[in-house]
Length: 102
Figure 1 (cartoon, helix red, strand yellow):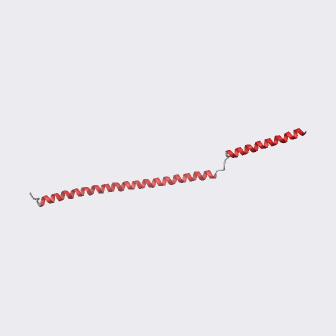
Figure 2: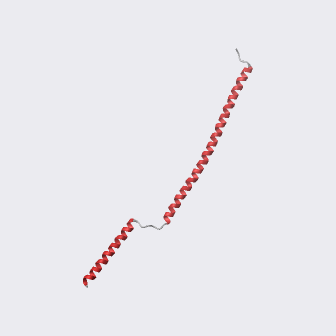
Figure 3: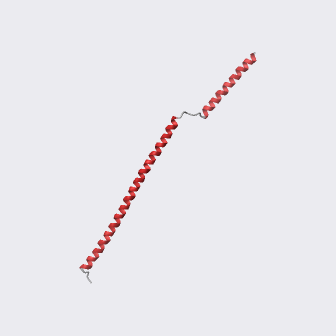
């Protein structure tokens, strides 16, 4: 049984409706992806700004450490103790020499 023109038009209309529905779904997906991309971009901008703040804070801390006077190190304390011991030994030797001669 051959198709009538009305039947063909009905099928074409159904196909057109299906295409319109598919296009609507695609448009919704595109809008959702655009929103997601915009959200990701905002998140990336916020993360970049926080990273810059963190790097600046680290540099400020480094600058503060550089501005502080150098503290005593273990080597400096050992050298000072050695010099003090040498001074005491030298003083004792001088005193011993003076005491022996008198």
